[in-house]
Image (cartoon, rainbow, N blue to C red; front, side, top):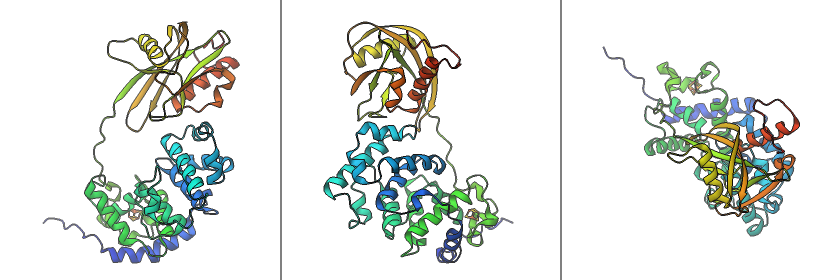
Length: 383
Ligand code: SF4
């Protein structure tokens, strides 16, 4: 006889469990996170942007440093972009920092740094970097507007509560998740509801090992009733991400200064500084690639010297191996042809600029080499 699949619970039963179980559970189990204290639209906004694609543990230190440097919209609006990117350095997805900076400039100029009277999701969506999720999160957490948020944690909880066997990343799947979240939202307590759902996903309804025995929603959870909660959400097979090989240069002048270039604002990692270089083309050696890139990016002819370091890094949609070589200029003076700017910088001052994680490793290597620390291959940074 064929086994009968248990029917998903009605949303009203789940909703009752949310009110009587999840919200009380949250009030005693909520983590004490810095952005949960002294909530203002600004503090909530910054935390929501930082938390996109980034773990809470990583965000805490960045958030505290940020609030110290830029305690208000006005302080952020008047800061130079270099300072903003420097504080974001290592957090990734740098367009978030640039958009936050741009939003601060609009809010400082158009709203005198106060948006407390403009508290709707629709209003928030006009700002750079604010999509549906972030608008709902800020509207509910800062203004308690009745808007339900659906992030990765909430998707996991919902797909298990309703034993959803579809693809949560498809348009239909996303629509279904939002519909369930909207239905379960406790009106007038939206901020608390959203945080409780996210906290349950982060602390109890874990991806691999859900702690169902401790879950305030266990009595209404279809995936648990079926006996296989961790099989939800149903995962699509991961697509292989492309890999690129990059050549870059540590170019030094007679004064021992290093040549760095600033990426164009519209490029990936826009506004950050880098050791100039670029993608390896077919049939090229790395050295040929480095030499061509320096010519194209800065108009200088170089000879390529010894290998400095090889760095591997994974971005969200590709992985990269960057081979860095020493270079010396044989003719021409740098001009910013395919970059926003360039600078000659003493090695101890390299840390004053903001870089991506991969370039930051090159900076560290150079600084350690100059300080005489053992770092593997020797780098003659002063030569
Ligand atoms: S019972 Fe288990 S699977 Fe269901 S929501 Fe709770 S922790 Fe997640």
